[in-house]
Image 1 (cartoon, rainbow, N blue to C red):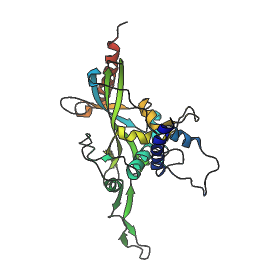
Image 2: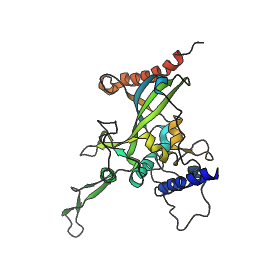
Image 3: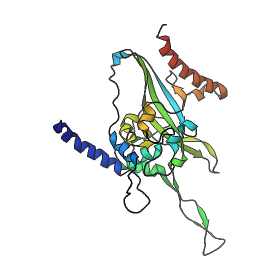
Image 4: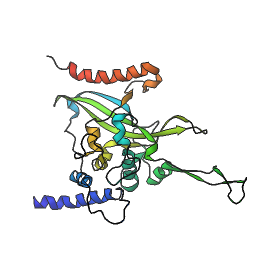
Length: 289
């Protein structure tokens, strides 16, 4: 037992140190004399819980779906707040951004057309994507009133401007365990897309993240629990327990098209609900009472 502990100790220290760089520091000077329980929660589970063993021969049915997770819905608010990182809590986007820029989590480009994780991005590419400069910004010269000079304006994408996520997942029935299960494959943050006049014209995807690679970072990040402050959950638990609200915008199909490409308005909403209902009906139809 001691030998196993000595072998695992360097891994635990390395994992804690890797995430410590991403943890926001207190705004007060000097170390805190009252340690917060959230730090203990984060180090209590340094690794995510492993998935149940699954053989390809045991998957008798599967369906791939793509969902939209809107953070403006009430159930999803814990994933959006706090918009500014705190000592104990960080938004989902801040956790992912920090893991990409400070650790070894890989982001993948071409999110609007390629969700197969084929084009990895460098850290510098991610920084340039999140922080841009407007070289056409004009301001009045304080020394010469009435004259305008060009002053570059910094435009940074923060967690406050990320309202939605795309989620790519697989639903399957495991006949060995007789259960229907969902496993998330990828996640993609979306920010508002604005016109030259500053009007919002839609949502713009930023990058895809392979979800299994993100789980070691999500499991060490606490999320607000609205029912019990003494039972802080991790982001990994939120996704594994399906404690979020979302709707389907695409399912695997021969045309590789989204619902919006063949349904509009109320019909699109009903089609999305129909896809979800058919998945759950498949499991219930397998049993006879």
